Amino acid sequence: MVQTCDFLVIGSGLAGLAYALKVADHGKVVVLSKTQVGNTNTAWAQGGIAAVMSAEDSFEEHINDTLVAGAGLCRPDVVRAVVESAPERIKDLFAWGVRFDLEDRRTGAKIDLTREGGHSKRRILHVQDHTGQDIHKAVLERARNHPNIEIREDQFAADLILNRDLQSYAMDPPRCLGAYVFDRAKGEPVEYFARLTLLATGGAGKVYLYTSNWSGATGDGIAMAARAGARVANLEFMQFHPTCLYHPSARNFLITEALRGEGAQLVTADGEAFTKKHHPMGSLAPRDIVARSIDAEMKKSGAPCVYLDITHKPAAFLRERFPVIHRRCLEFGIDMTKEPIPVVPAAHYLCGGVLTDLAGRTDIAGLLAAGETACTGLHGANRLASNSLLECLAFSQNAAQFTIANKDRFPLPDPRELPRRPREAANEDEMIVISHMWEEIRRLMWNYVGIVRSNRRLLRAKTRLDNILVEIKDYYGGYGMHPDIIELRNIALVASLTVECALRRKESRGIHYTIDHPEKDGAIGQDTVLIPANA
Image 1 (cartoon, rainbow, N blue to C red):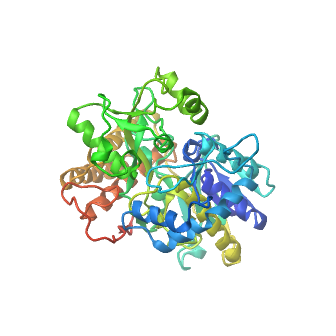
Image 2: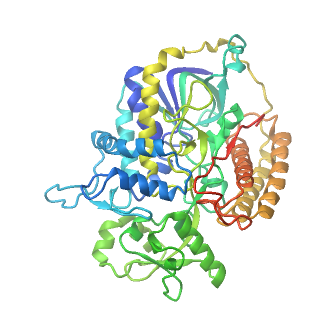
Image 3: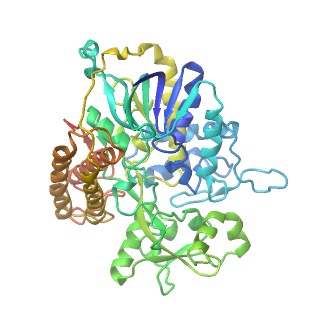
């Protein structure tokens, strides 16, 4: 089955939907959602979005905070462009129906700004503690009501269609023509052809055993781009959020950094605040430092977790400001107004990804990337809190501007020559092996490529992952499309590329910390760029 459109968007989070809205007046847009459209990391974002909105703040301070957090690996031109565009991107959200919390709800006074780790000023716009959910809901509704945008659920993109796949285009310069997709509802493959394709598939937290991400965050866009030959970069920089709820039944519930912005302290079981031993900003230090300080305290004491204490704040304030967290903690028998919240670090945000320029262009003509899928140069070696939703909006805007100005350079391909690839149907009796390999990869990544690393651990991970990739190719290479097989291929490849990036970095910088090279190699770092071959 073949479908065509002008602009194909793979991913239904903020980056994909914002791009769709920006280009929809210039052609037909199809947005593909891997499962249901609400399943996205955007909707899980609690904290907010960073922007200079106060006379007490400045672009220079936001830029500096971003550069400091990025540990010498940010691209200053990208940081400046994104930070200075933030007020306009906030106007887009208002126009799309987002309503941020106000300081005085009775009069509709100025926007309430909170503070998070690494920020020198209060500049985080929020909707209580469910900002991402409200932003996604508003932008999704706007996209659904646009006549040129079609959102299709249960469409799992497996690989990119390249001009080398079609005989009459094979001699042209490398170009992306769309994507091979598995229609989950119908259980059959679909080929989508487009002038331009945007990868906006989100991050790869599910490559790790413990994560704050939704279950579909398996690095799909990164894996597809790598298999197509696009460069990927800085995959060693997986940010571990310091505070996820520690409970057997809540392995991926995030406790937003905004609690620390409102005065919560990280403490041991004995109530001792410990983070200032590791950084002058204490609990509001950049995330990489806070995560390592928690890891160190847990290893020193043997405790399974630490605690986040905000009991000094009035109960009414906590219930109003953090209703989702308050309600969720109560479900597990934890009253945050009276007792500290048990927390542990978990894989949260990938600062690397598919290498792009400021317009979101990848190495492959016709292929753009935005959001967590992309490595844009904004985050460097450690993302500053609440810059992620801003990045989605800024790069979707840039990619849309490029698309509108250049769409006529990318004629809609003729799909009639698409080669059919008959494959054997997957044997359900054999599919049980997938869950075992999936579990092995995630546990291996957590144990050997986690918060603190070493050459020995990384080499052990590489050896096993090399074998797993061969096993996947041999064992499942002949089977037809199956969602579990596609995801297994993707997490195995992303895990392998992550280990390769980590082995190449002979220093500790930002999120990447190795006991074999505990210091930075100079103030300014170099990107770890991989050129995948036959991935």
